[in-house]
Length: 199
Image 1 (cartoon, rainbow, N blue to C red):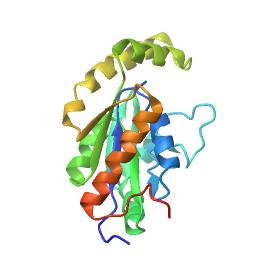
Image 2: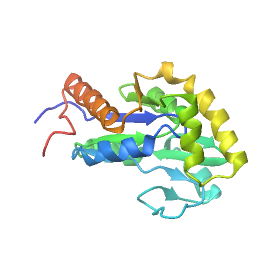
Image 3: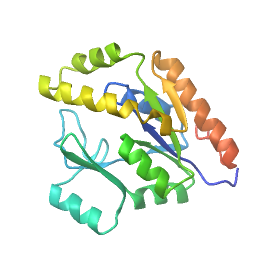
């Protein structure tokens, strides 16, 4: 059993980069890694499960948590608030589990400032055209929302340089393998157990 502190791993990237799919597969292959469940004011989508996908709260409740210092990071994205509760992260780390956060660029930078040892991974789409194709292919958003997401995505791509690692999601298996490799290498460097190793 390694004695180093487990990792905080942040995965960010623009809408349509495949963050959720990659994060889900990384978690599936990593028994020692837990997902941080963000708090949000956005309305649940079809299939969303409260407490699993997000903790859905009212704007008033979110602001109360933010103002009492319960949130390690928070941001307003597409008109909704999103945040990460510090207690959830600290509890996982204390229990010997590395934590995966799938959050936006603003949140990633806030986590790095609050927890400098966090490992930041930015997922890049293969191209601008494929990004737009993926966003339109979802069929969940109106045209104005898609255009706003594309505009934000182009801005977010400029933040990739601030991340520790950049991974192009052009092939899902290869991309997931690369992310798992980064987590394994960083765990070793940190003197911690590799979360993807069998328990």
